[in-house]
Length: 260
Image (tube, rainbow, N blue to C red; front, side, top):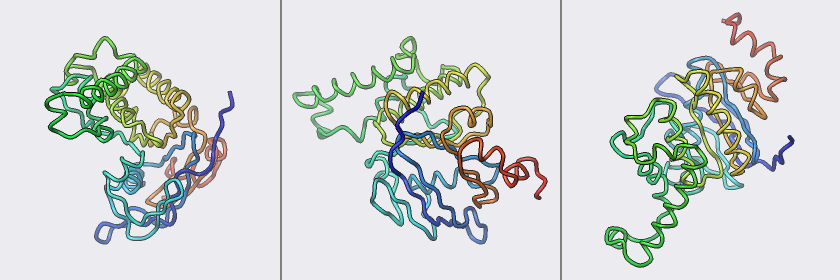
């Protein structure tokens, strides 16, 4: 099945990031096209999470720019990034363990809530109508992710694979244009990984969401990505289709350790 990949939606240019004397990223450039699944791969310590942190405003790079839908920024703060339509999941789950699945995913709607806090608290008039609309959207996500049976369960009681699914649901609740996934399959067994792959492909296909993901499982990356960028020691060493990257000598040596 061929999908319609559009113009560049996210353009990363010459990003360098250092902490003290330690260079995390050196002059990294790549772009992401609308509707594609774009993977960022590399050995441990390559700078992958640092790159995501620059895109979603957690870190401020020393040099370089990031353009999103034609607007260029030296630096964006995390809230601004979310408001513009970039959502993110994290390696270590930042879920509210005591709250239900439904309430966790509802927290992802916060930026979309227009009525003021008093009206929300009283749940009157427009606020009540608005909350019903938000709940309907969240129920749609719960159905989509096949977690209806757990909607009232405290997240902390769910197995790890389902917690990761709730984390994905919370990011989707923002209705993002671009979804940043930081190792969505870390710590999962084979079956959970297969489920997560299917959901990522469905999000990309049914919601039309552009996906940028960091993932260590190379077979997953090669299966689901349209294009792959490869980092090693904070430098870009490869960029292209899965086949191009798979056959790139520099990428092979970085993964097999022959270059160091």
